[in-house]
Image (cartoon, rainbow, N blue to C red):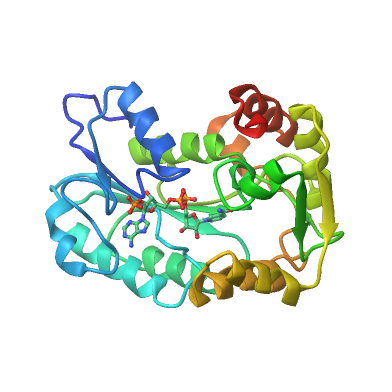
Length: 279
Ligand SMILES: NC(=O)c1ccc[n+]([C@@H]2O[C@H](COP(=O)([O-])OP(=O)(O)OC[C@H]3O[C@@H](n4cnc5c(N)ncnc54)[C@H](OP(=O)(O)O)[C@@H]3O)[C@@H](O)[C@H]2O)c1
């Protein structure tokens, strides 16, 4: 049952300034639901690396959206997520929605701990975000006209962060989604070259995609100033997770929302209109 707005205490959105979290926060706000953001730049501040900041954002009987930073695939993420969930429950939280990743060992460990934890849960196990090309590390290469990655023919069902946020919002407000593990994918399998082709078409300018060796890619990341931990995470995602294990479609967005997921071409067209790829 959906709670009425008067009864609804602030929903806690961890990562509420990030790609998915800020879309969740915006949707909740548009529906008149009070929101508390959990992030280092929010007030009060919340830092996954400083557990002393955790109790300060817990306000009682609330739904909690967890987007772990820097990435649910890093060692230590499952324990931090489980510990936070325990603390939230002890403060009176009523449900948890976890943003997770597809085909990732640590992510699945975090999912299991949440499933075995004290709160009713919904898991959103997501494919690669389409918005990585417009709001993340792939934006600069797209703007530079050449995207060089250590992948060739592997396909990925890129999922739109707006779809993820819509499912998350429903799961935070409606008991119907409790106990559901939704595997969120887009409606179409694309290679990275296909995705760049869609973006180039939508942006109306040439963008080249090339496959490069992993070593060259990681050396480029290090030269661009990424920390060794960040380089190792991105390498893990490209070398291990993008091996074809996630090259399949699921209809869980339709199952959760009663409508199909947005296609990558729609994402590309709408994003091109914002001008972000024309700077
Ligand atoms: N990108 C993908 O394709 C993909 C696919 C599947 C799953 N995921 C998962 O999705 C999550 C990332 O979501 P996103 O892309 O929406 O995030 P994002 O855009 O990178 O934003 C990260 C959010 O976390 C906050 N944050 C960063 N460091 C923090 C810290 N130490 N303590 C507390 N908050 C911190 C940031 O705010 P402040 O900077 O203000 O702290 C921001 O709100 C990760 O868990 C990732 O594993 C990603």
